[in-house]
Structures are given as structure tokens and as C-alpha cells.
Image 1 (cartoon, rainbow, N blue to C red):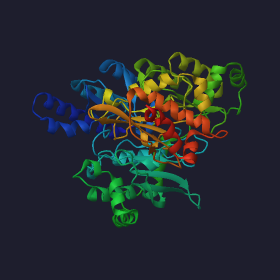
Image 2 (image 1 turned 45 degrees about the vertical axis):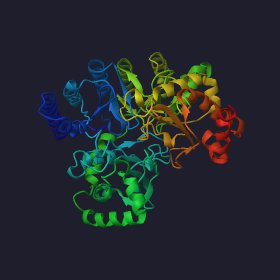
Image 3 (image 1 turned 45 degrees about the horizontal axis):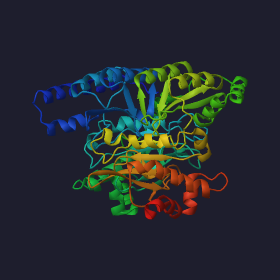
Image 4 (image 1 turned 90 degrees about the horizontal axis):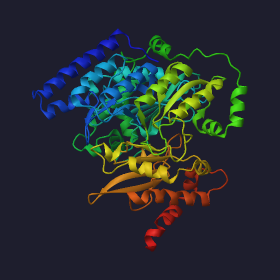
Length: 554
């Protein structure tokens, strides 16, 4: 993974010192709330419902065991002993004291971490596939370009105060796992007819109040120009994006208003001034950064391991975990492991300090000391030998991190919701927990099969509800919390935005609503058809009819 050089470390250290003084002046009454607000946001600090929330950057979801241990210790010392992994692959602390935040940032700096640009109207943490570099279907490992883009976007003087937050995702696999179509800019890496790395550029995607999937603005971009082209896109957005209405400020609204052809024309005109300039990436620079992401020192191993095969054959619980939580690896004899942060009855994405230490130990012992966070709010050990999987499972299970539910209905993506977030209209976590309680039979979950259920507490869609096969959105109705349901959303190459099935439900009704949606699916599906495919084949009508039947007959 990328290692700071002296300049990187100096930049982060100087930022800590700046923020320490800014916080001191605010607490001394020398800065007003309005004066301090942009300063704290630039350092990842929100003011939430109960306490500040500090969002710590995890660039493209990649961490070392040393960094995770530091996060564990910070959560223990300055928070309530746990952290929350977000859909942007970052870690959030929900209960730090404002006066402690400078010291937290100072501690993060000792392990090459920070909270810069995790908040505010700037370019946010760049995300990618959690299996980048090891996925069998990977065409190009995008992490080196992602790191170059991170350096370019950090403290970018022109883009520090954009009309709204700006999100970029990169993907280099056949199957998109980074949701590039749901980002302000999505970069899809591929090899062109000449075998050279090229990029398909998507623009104008985003969830939130007006969910829109992105449009291809450029089919073929030479990788050397990715910075100058993105700069041209964001410059056009920065000039013309609306600042008079926060709900109309995202680039997706501008692209929709102008139309993709006119937007592309303006970007190309801007790009003409930038192309082949200082932002051009040289092969030497790409090679320098790519060096940090070279393959791990893998052993030469057989494709099969007798001890692993025997354990799968004689231990059904281990076999179930392998089926759901173990993933293919491009190197023979290795697998990737997802550690589920969705145990029964727990808030999705939450992890205790003790569990963080446990995961760091697992990474050191079995995965070259590295781990990744996913936008599905789980953790990944990317490089585990087949012969070590049983030991990893035993230790993960003892720590409550081996729930075999990855990709199933209870692998819920969920924002913190009204329990923490001051923007939320409704609670999310209790809904997720109630649904987990409703579907606590793993055998039934396996029978249902792959199903993505996403929950957001408000229209900002931090829980990605629009692209869930089943999406749940918390809404405020006459001061009460209600929940609107969508079905048919999907991430991936054939991404789609879900359709609202009808009037909203009370919190108490939600587990039953999901149950009835599943009943229709189980009744109507054909062969091995997935939930999303049944919805696409039948449409919303039969699901809506069954879900609202009780209400209409009451």
C-alpha cells in the first residue's frame, strides 16, 4: 500500500497543527460557529444529533494492521469503544469530544492517516473495488491511478469550495463493484484494442434526493490524461453548478439541465487548455506509485489444499462460511475473506475496538498485514492461503465476525440514521435490527439467495437505498418516522434505480413488509432466479399488490 514520503507527512502534520490552533481559538470564543464550521468540515468533523462525528479517511478502503490498531485505540480512548465503517469505505467515530479531535488527528498522523476532505463541498475519498489487485476478473489494477488522483485532489485550491460534495469511484474489473454509475465521476479502466490501459468516463451519476445513473461522457480516455480530463469536468461543474439551491447543486443536475452533449462540449473546450500540460501523468510517475501496489510475496501453492477440502466436507458451519464469505483469488492457493460486520442484532458496519485489534492480528498472521473496507460496510482479508482458512474462520467466529451472510438479505447496508445523524428523518439501525430479527434463520436466508437490502435515514441516501434490490428510505410525515420502500434497484454493470412501490409504512410494519416481498419472490421465481431478476421480469405490480393487501382489506 502507499507509504507517505517526507512531503506527505509534513503536509498532514502541518494540517494537524493548523486545526489544533483553530479548535483552540473556537473553544476560547475567538472564532464564531460560522467561522469554525468550514474549518472543522475540512478536517472531517460534523456536528451530529448527540455529539460531533469524526469521519476518518481510508483511501480506496486500504489499511494496514498498524493503522487499524491505531483506529481501535482511538475509538477506545476518545469514543465509546467502537467505530462505524461507512459506504465510502471510511471509518466514523460517533462520540468524540470536540476538544479531543486535534489530538485524535495527531495520533492518526503517526500512522499516515487523516480526516482531510472527508466532509465539505470538495472531492471526497476516492473509492474502488474491495478486491482490487486480487480479483480474477480484474482487467487493470486501478489503485495506482486512484492514489495519484488522491494526491491531486487533496488540498486542490480550485476545488476546495465546490457547489456540493464530489465523489469519484474507479473500477478495473469486468464486473463493476465500485458503483461507478452512481458517482459524480466514474472511471472504468479497460484495455483498448492496442492493449493499452484506457478509461471509460461516466459523469453525472449520484443518489440522494434526485437519483440518477451516470452517462458515458468519453468512451476512450488515455490514462495519461485522467487528471486533466477530470479537472476539466470539475472546472465546468464548478463554474456552472448551482449554488443557490443545495438540492440542485450536484453535477448530475447540471448534466441533466445542459444535456450530455452540451456538457461534453464544454468539458472538451476546457480540456483543450489542460491536455498535455503539467497534469499529464508520465509512465515514470505511474510506475513509481504502482510500485506501492505490487503483488504481495505470494508462495507458489497448488490450486487445491487437502486440509481445506476435508474441513469443508466434514464441517457444515465452516462450509457455509466458505460459500458466503470466501472469494476467488487470482493467485492459486489463495482466497479473499470478507469479515461480516453484520452479525445478528448489531448495527451494520459497527466494529468494536477489541474486534479491530482482532482483525489486525488476523491480517498480520494470514494476510500480509493489510486489509480493506468495502462500501458494503464489511472488512476484507485479501490474501489468505487456502490452508489457513479454517484457522481464520475459528478466530473470526470467536470474535463475532464470521456470520455467513455476505450477499444475503441480512448483509444490510445501513447509514447511522436518526440515532446519530442530525440530517436524518428517521432511524435506520432499529429497522435493520428488526429485519435481522425477522430473518434469523440462516437456512431460509440461503433459500432466498442473493439479495441486497439497503436502508437510508433520509434523502441523502448514505445507505444507497436507491440501488438496493430492496431499498428502505426513512421519511418524515407530520413529525413521525415512516419508511418508503423501493424494489428493483441494483449496483453493477446493469445498475438500476429502484421503483417506489407505494405509500410509506410505520417502523413496526417494516419487517412484515420485507417478509411479504420475499413471499412474492419465493412464489413467483423460476429455477435459480434471483430476487432482482424476478422483479425485473414481473415488474412492481405483484409485489405491491401483496404488500398492500392487508392495508386495503383492513
